[in-house]
Every structure is written in structure tokens, then in C-alpha cells.
Amino acid sequence: EDKVVQSPLSLVVHEGDTVTLNCSYEVTNFRSLLWYKQEKKAPTFLFMLTSSGIEKKSGRLSSILDKKELFSILNITATQTGDSAIYLCAVFIQGAQKLVFGQGTRLTINP
Amino acid sequence: NAGVTQTPKFQVLKTGQSMTLQCAQDMNHEYMSWYRQDPGMGLRLIHYSVGAGITDQGEVPNGYNVSRSTTEDFPLRLLSAAPSQTSVYFCASSYRSGSFYEQYFGPGTRLTVT
Image (cartoon, rainbow over all chains, first blue to last red; front, side, top):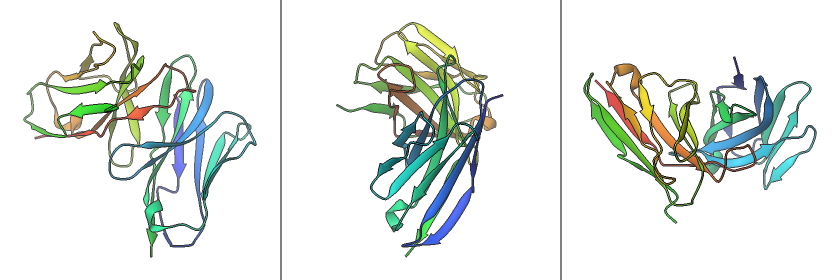
């Protein structure tokens, strides 16, 4: 059974801190790993990772994939209250043409 | 471009009732899918479609039907609602199936079954 596991499930930090969110996976036919941010409503796309060791960056957010150890991390530096959200990790399964999501990490940034 | 739209935003049903959640996209996307989101469980795929006339089951298809008669619309039917179907439902679409195409999500429908 394809499985994606995120940790921690919940995280509370102060503004300005740096956070690292984890995503590990066990799937039959890996194609890519995606990160989403979900605030009040629909998830919005952050990154897609397909190759090991290549960091993707967008402002204060960055992410990297390790296909040997089957995990990815999402880093957020100099956190702001606007970063408070649920962060979702998903793996795209080749052949089955579907995304399998992890449980999500609820991140709360306190001022 | 309205993107992906879903109706209704909220719905309360009694056990045993049936209803259809509507999803439409105006981006000419081939791939559409339905997810449900429950606390602590992320999003789980219910059904998906790689094009008009083609649908397939996801992880949790029981109790739900779909059809795709046009490229734009992908309705989700609950045949006989059960309290276990209380959830937030998201529809998503992408240009084609395949990981290289970003999925766009609708705003969601919050369904409560009593």
C-alpha cells in the first residue's frame, strides 16, 4: 500500500524561527513529490521535486528530496505569522496517475 | 478564468439522502479528481478522470459515483449518505494527467451528514 507520512503533525514556533517539516514515503512507483500550503481553503502548490539533491527555493521556503532514503524536507526560514498553515506533502504515483497525500503538518507561528 | 469552481460551499444531509457535488473548470484541463479531507488524514483520492468519458477509482471510492460527460464538469454523487461521509470535499484539475502538470484545487464543499 502506498504511504506518505509527515512529521511533526503539529508545530508551534515564534516569528523569526526556522522550521523544518518532514515527509517520508513508501510507494510502488515514485514519479515526483509535491508540497502544498493550505490556509483556510484549497491547497496551493509550492514545489515539485523529482531528482535527489536538487534544492528548490522560493523566497524563504526551500525543499529537497532524497530518493535513496525516501524522504523530503521543507524548510522555512525567518518565519512570519502569514506562514501559519497546514503544509501537505504528496507523492505522484506513475502508472496509477494519482497523488497520495500525507496527513499534513499544522504550523502555527506566534508573534 | 474562474478556475475550478465547486457548489455548494456547505451542505447538511440526513442519513440515506442522496446528492451531487458539482465541480467545473474553465481551463480546458483533461485531468480532474475528487478528494476528501478529514482531520489528521490529509487528502484522500475518491475518483479521478483522465478525460471526458473516462473515470477511475481512487483510494476511497465506496459510496460515491462520478461521470465525465464533458471536459468541463466532473460531478460527484453520494448515493445514500452516511455519517462517515462527513468531510470536506475538494475537486482538482490539471492540464493533463502526470506529475509535471500542476493541480489546481477548488474552494471545497463542507458536507455534514447527520
